[in-house]
Amino acid sequence: MAKRWQNDLGAADITTEAVFMNRRAVLAGMAAGAAVGLTGTAAQAADAGAPNDWDDITSYCNYYEFGTGKDDPKKYAHTLTTTPWSIKIDGLVDRPGTYDLGQILDKMTIEQRIYRFRCVEAWSMVVPWDGFELADLLQMAGVKSDAKYVAFETVARREEMPGLRYPVLDWPYVEGLRLDEAMHPLTLMATGIYGKPMPNQNGAPIRLVVPWKYGFKSIKSIVRITLTDRQPPTAWNKANGREYGFYSNVNPTVDHPRWSQATERKLGGGLFSRRQPTLMFNGYDKEVSKLYAGMDLRKFY
Ligand code: MTE
Image 1: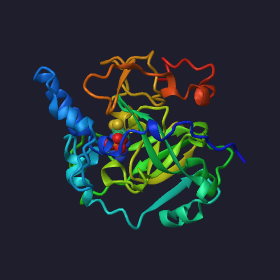
Image 2: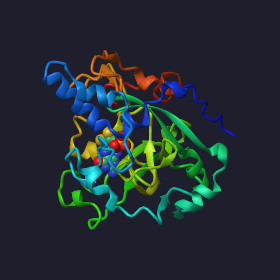
Image 3: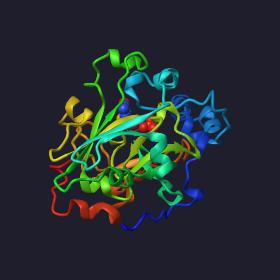
Image 4: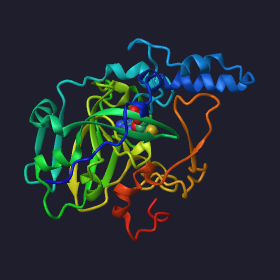
């Protein structure tokens, strides 16, 4: 059996739940603090992690199916029906079919359902995800030897997702990984955060988390997984291929055409926190660099 991931981050590394769920207020508070000459009481209040109840917490989420406005996912994502939920697994697999999420979870052992790690979306944060390794799900379906890539698709329900009325992306949202990336023990299918079920705006009931890649690879509310021998299209690459490549590995040495990707600020670190250098592969160099041995990562961005 493949070696399972050993977590080296402890409780003290975790971004507090209030700060994570309240990212928008933290960021708005920091911007307001900066604008009024660093008096920043809003920012300080938010940084103190003032407890919020689950209903009034505001998330700084990207989930364009619910709109591109910063408040939209929080406002509209509750309309998404997440039970029952099934994932169609097809393409180059031995056992194609429609897998019920409840049954998938029932089949997983406790050791297969785990907690994790650091994520970067311009802000770094450490989120305790609840989920299982994608490899365990792919093994359930049986990967055929000619499969080379894994394609993912988000649910697209016009009646539940107001953002689908606007052609900001070519719906449904799609993503892809090379098979070895998908089988890596760091690649997680997440069903919860902070020990609670995944909030809708964060991709309920099941989403991808690839901690060494930029946030947009982490596709939400997955309904289809296809094993294929061709590199699959990805939503952001289709929308703007010059800015968003297939790999999208966190790489401080390759700038986005419109901004540097060399540094980050810790979410919840406070208004006065210093930017810190972003680490290659988001700090998972030791674990994943061998996947890209010999590849020019400027070309394969
Ligand atoms: N998945 C879907 N289906 N639709 C989206 O708009 N946004 C992506 C990614 N997954 C997105 C998505 C982007 S740009 C980011 S940064 C992360 O989700 C944000 O995840 P979070 O809101 O849980 O932090």
